[in-house]
Image 1 (cartoon, helix red, strand yellow):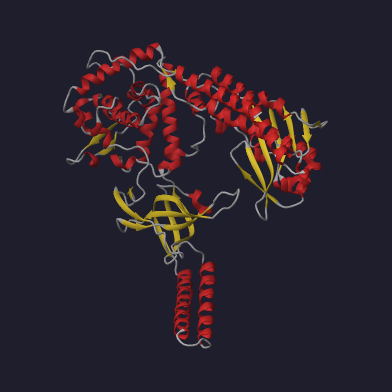
Image 2 (cartoon, helix red, strand yellow):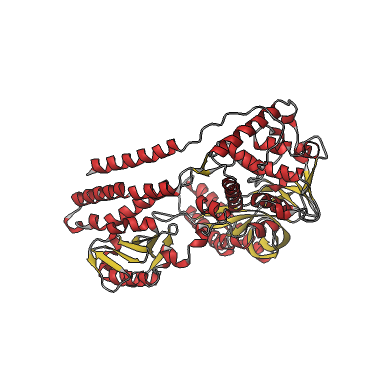
Length: 602
């Protein structure tokens, strides 16, 4: 059976590789050099020049230069260094309604960052990784959608091909699941017999999810005849631009003289000086732009890390101080009974511990009663410390760095923000906080004014499927995945911890592993007792027959089945599988009841 599983898997991978090989875009043949610009916007030209893989980082920068050339804002360079350039936003809409979605996204980004109508060119970087990722993914999707509208691009792997790959993945999934079940059964003890077959459905479902993810993953675009012709023309434009020796040294402010040519040069990769001065990606957390106080300035941020007192609550400091005092007193008492040189060593160590503990107690008391109040702009929020985690348990942040510019200096030191409060604020917000200076722990946080970036990027998610983003940009009905999934479409929402606890007889907690999988763990030691998997849609229908193993359960959903330590229930095009782990096998008689509870929420 192992050989069958290996052959089936290799065959599926070979078929997938063949699809990728056949759908590669051919390299366009450069057309004759020309100075005439076509109708396609720079970001779409960038997609074509990159052989339809996806827009690169120059696409957004080229769009920014193009907006400046068209008069939506001005780029001014006050010194010889292009990095010192500033953007000055034009008053009035200036035909905003005619902008393409990705052009409006760049313009909104500039306007959100501007203070007093101006923003340094290098201050457009992001200070939040989720915002940066979400913004870029939507920009790319909007560029791809426009290229498809123009007939210049199409999906590299079409919907039909993805469906066929997902359907044929049933063969290797079942083969591997059976092979694993056979291996478990042959190596299991007499008491553990049957566990392999009970886990076969779960194994197959997991494998189908993996194969389905590989088949459905966005692999970029591919060419069309019209796209090949357009790419050939624009490569001719690139040849003409590259022939000008001074063109590659033009700064961003050159759009005032050259018009749209620097934008297309950036899209085609022949304006390195212009793109080097622009960065719409993640900025540096150590040197951050701030507009607090009404003027733009850079703040150098230091992030404390090494001393264990940082971020600690007063109770933890008092406890540590008392332990050191106790050890010091014990050392001094022990020194009286030690012979020879041991007396001096024990006395010195005891005295040091006693002084250290007393110092921590005194500083903790002063620190607790003399907090500082600060009003300023949030510069950066990032994870500082996490729990150690453990087996089957991920590490969880408990302390974040919070860098704030209070306007008193161009240098600052980050504070320790309890991770439970990290979602309250984001870079750009004006906040009032109270914090303890010695431990640098924030004890209260109030947002006085929300920053423009937070409003602009609210709701961005990093898990949206690119196919869905492109379809949403095209105006098709299907919304992004994050918007489609309701609360009841997530595995963790179909069974409550209390219900699982009643079945297994011990308190449990739930840990969501993505929207489709949930683990229910013992509350005391974190041991897994139950795995729940949710499936929906056409792909789910393909491997529902494999889940219909065991004894039918009447009156639960459209159909339900249980077999020893596993079960499955279907309702419409959605179904759920549950599998009890060894520590939860006592709940096997309650599987029909658990399936009924879940079916009511499907």
